[in-house]
Length: 584
Image (cartoon, rainbow, N blue to C red; front, side, top):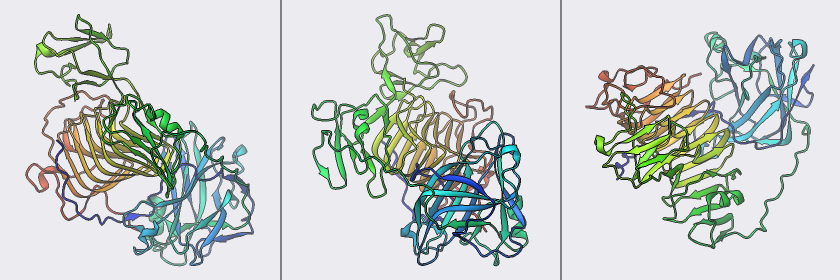
């Protein structure tokens, strides 16, 4: 029986439009070239004061200095605006050869549903992704190509219609790290008026931006929007094959119902078979009671905003566990590598931190692991039935796709994360999900992922929920408990939500790393009950020698100074956050 979800409280957090993540490639490749002058068929996005460029802002990705990404906001005219590319003025020579470097370009806007909100801010829904793709940059031969006064011209394969009167934001980043440096210094110029986050200009912190702010003016990229014909014509996408017979009991106008049930000869026998045929609008309907499914769920195709791909799990378990069969001598040879997750009759057996032995009620009912012979041996009173061991790396895998919905699912036994999200994706919705007994996280979003969870439970994993990089996650009704290491952590990433309860995790209940952000309403975090690490961990927290704590050190709050017996924080109705909201 799961604890009752916390009482719902309206979420009033405003999300700055600078939260920019990219969906899977929405259009064909972007062309990139260096030009001596700005293209004639182009318009500026801001009213710059003279001189045209009085400074520069460096976009970079370097092994020794990390990375910086740039964001520029503007509002298209009321009549709308159609563009075919961008041109950015270069301020200084680049010190990087830029061989095989890729620039990631993302353009987002506030959702249409937020039209009544302050301009430039999204009160709830995630930003709509209008465009996202990578451009292969021209090489900086002899470090002489990216010179001051030249322009980097990015041409789109298809015209892009910007919404009339709705704020948009351009996000620039190097798409992938490389052994050597990658940097471009783009021109910035003061605007004619003081800037805010809702108008043109930077939404970045750092030395240069603070200089502009302290001067009482705001810098904007010297950026022009191309209005001529597209650089190339986009290749038409092949039409989906609708001729193959499908086990479908009903067909909706927006998609098909793909039944999965190995007991029914008329249905798909496996998740993989159904996933291979899925297209926008389809629902993969997993028959109630037909699991567990001992295979990976991976759908390679994206849905669309109007026709998402839906997985209706009906409470089934998708698992990386396989049964362990013991011999009459009460031993079993293990073919998977250590570390692994061991489960008996649905309950995970963690390893004690002090001894490395699997936890058992008594010595006679214990199970022991011999790494030399790769065998598990049962004690004389241990039950030989109902044992499982983790063997699959992925369970529910989302890679570079958008507009998927996953409902009423349990993901367990992965040698990685139960719900593993990578690449660029948006419109990813999870409803009533459980991630448990995984070697890494119950749920983990990476890279440029925009996702939402409506009711989630994460327990018995190495960490409950651990999101990284530029991912942005919204949550509602979240329960995280009894994970071996960390309950909830955001590393660089952002999480916003309401009705979150965290307790009983082995090392840290709530943490951020590298300035990750958590903003929540009705957040309840119980004090850590452990004085010493109770269980062995294997992933992010494995090398930590710190004593168990309630809050990660980066959050910087002292539990003793916060109200509530046994609680770190119960901010109802006031919102709680690990970092201040963005300000201009």
